[in-house]
Amino acid sequence: MKYVKIVLGIVLLLVAALLVSGYEPDRPAAELAPVATSPGDGAVLVIGGTRATGLEVVKVLRARGDEVVVLARPGSDASAAEATGARVVRGDAMSSADLDAALALGRFRAVVSTLGARGVDGPRPDFDGNRNAVDAARMAGVQRFVLVTVIGAGDSYEAAPWIARRFLDPVIVEKSKAEDYLKASGLAYTIIRPGGLLDKEAQGRAFLTEDTRAMSWIRRADLGRLTVQALDDPRSIGKVYHAHDPDRTRFWSIPMN
Image (cartoon, rainbow, N blue to C red; front, side, top):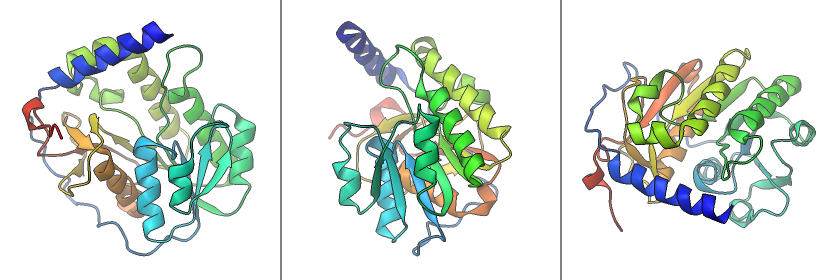
């Protein structure tokens, strides 16, 4: 397993080095409204909310006073989510019972999932966990579902750099299955596909586009805000977006510090 992680790390570095796009997409014909300043009516369950993009979503929601429940695996570090005031519930998205129990805690208006896999052995949460989350939302009567996947999934396969398609194909396949499952679920869905992800402060220039050729890096903090923006706006229902930062379309445009 240690060897696998080292190899994956090298692969991801190669991906970062070779993601050269330069393609400039058109903005949506009707841009979504800015993130609201007041909380929505009902809680939001964030799956994957203890770290990375999911944590950024939690921060945006909590900053304006939303009630947020974060599903955190037993033993995982949920301190950052707890620090925002979110309620942390221990459970695993690979367990339907855990998801059902989380959604039985109150009245939820939406589920946001940023699930992804860290390893390559066994069932992958990219599909199995998201399928469980979609089923749990339906059973609980939660209609709104926002899913964050990856550029390369579904009809965006050609937008992903060839090296990403070569080495990350298992992830792309599983996330594509998750997208298809959500689309067929009958839920009021929105799917957001980011490209390369950066752990930097938000800049506010990124936007969502329906152009499936769009590819860029994006700061996780900007992606978190765009995810909440889509959650808030009913015009995003039934849409698949690429999260695009016009300042981050080429390798040499990535900030190194």
